[in-house]
Structure formats: structure tokens, C-alpha cells
Length: 362
Image 1 (cartoon, helix red, strand yellow):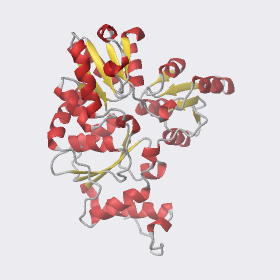
Image 2 (tube, rainbow, N blue to C red; image 1 turned 90 degrees about the horizontal axis):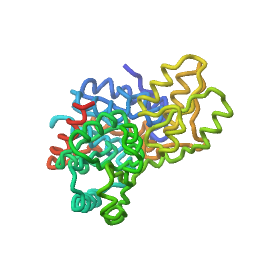
Image 3 (cartoon, rainbow, N blue to C red; image 1 turned 135 degrees about the vertical axis):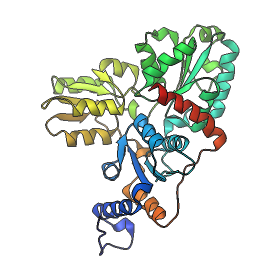
């Protein structure tokens, strides 16, 4: 059992981090197998410390699909909790501790904008186009790709998914992150000149019909705010300051940065690369700072630094605090399910098809 500090102030906002953690662990023990707490790599340390599993979008989706717990508390952002709700059963609830935790990239592709783009694209395109949505998107977009014979991808499995997509059609429409789509298609042998960036605010993405017909890959002009903070000059700085340093970045980074780095990959890849590296090695990591700081702390025998001199922090991920987790656990202990995320079945049924296809291909 985890003790609760008896003399703690009555207002939870005045509790110490240790007192909050003790209460969370006590409630977890009380709820037992009815509870599963998942946390994304970008969550703050104090939230990761009370999670049952930590991972990237693919790993957490897999965890949710396999979960038997009645209640899944998802410490992440809204689209992740939606994905978990779609993949879990009717007797399970998915809870998002902070309802304000959204994703600016996901917000860059709305159902209406995508429907308009698809109608205009298919009106001028003669070949078969397969839509692929990055998991950083709303459930409605996952349902959309299912209706049109496409699927979902994560940064871990994007290559496998695009390989599959090209077996299903001649062309791919990738959204909402243009950078992941570009580097993945390029590594599959698609020349940059055969890719077209789709301006979501302009008819035909801002291109003439002939340019649309020539392209093989259409890239929605969305991006991750955090992964735009890194610059090629940052790579040059660290290579001069620390000779022999390895630079690894997330594939949501711009293409020129990825080309200048030593390697790129998902958050799981970045963490594994550092954790498995030999003592004395040096790493500059281009991704969210909470993960980089955690990698540095657990690898004291290596130099691990953030590639950017700025605080590359995801404000939406950072919204979730231990107190956020505590409040929803207190609700569960009292028989209340608060902050539940529910995807309407009309949307969830189609989105589930796309997610199941992704998981089977991963």
C-alpha cells in the first residue's frame, strides 16, 4: 500500500509533488486491475512516474487495443484518447485527464477541408489515389480514410503503411503532416518533384490541374509546432562544440534538417538509440524536451542534449499534471467517470477499420 500524508493541506494545489504522487499510487492500488494509466513520451516526468506504460502513438494504441482494464486513463492529447476509445470495448472507458490537451497539427486538417480537397482532387485525377492519415488526426479523418480504402500510420510504421498504399493505388494523399509524408515517400524512391504540397486553403491545393495529375504524392500542408523549432544551424553548432556527436531527429522535422542529421525515427526509435548506445557516446536529439531530459537523466554515462537551444516543449502535452491524474482517479474511486472521451459509433466503426488495418500491417 502507498501511504497518504495525514497532515497535508486541504487544498490539493498546496500539496507537494510527493503528496500528490502518494495519493495517486494509493488510488491505483485501490482500483487495481480496473485501471490502466498510459502516458506518452512527451508527458512531464511526474506524470510518467505514475504510468503503467509509456510509449509513442503506435505502442500506446497497441496497449489500448490489448487492455482488459475497465478504465484507461490516457495521459496524452485528445486524438490519442479518441484512438484508445475506438480500439477498446463497450465495457471500457477512456479518460483524458486534461480535456484542453489538443494537437495543433490535428487541428490543421478538418473534415470539411479534407472533403473539399478530396472532391476537387478526384475530379481532376484519373489514377487511383489512396488516402493515408497520420495518427495525429481526429477520429473523423480516420473514418474518412476507411471509407476511401486507405488507412492510418504513425511515425514508427509510416514506411510500411506507404509501401502498402502504393500496392493499392498509383498515388497517395498524405495528411496532416507534410514532413513525415515527404521523408517517407522520398525514402521509398519517390522524387521530390513528384510530390505536391496541398495548400488546405486554396482550390486544388493552389495548383493547376495538370500539376495535380503529374504528382504521385499529395502532402497536406500541416506540421508539428514543436518539431519546427529545430534548425540545420543547430546541427552545425553541436557538431562543432562536441566532435563525434550523433544527431537524431523526429521525422516530423523539416526535410532539410532530416537530411542533415545522422538518423531519424519515431520517439520509440530515438529513445532506443540513446538507451542502447555505448557509454561515452554523445547525442543531440531533435524532439520534445521532456523526452530528451528523461533520456539524459537515465543515461548519465552519455552526453544527451536537446538539439535546440530553445525549450522545444509541447504545450498541449504539458497541460497534464499529476493533479489532473489525481482528480480523475478520485472520481473513479467515488464511482464517477469524469473526462470520458467517446467517439460516436457512426464514426468509430469506420475509424476502427482503418486502425485495425494499420495494426495488422505494423
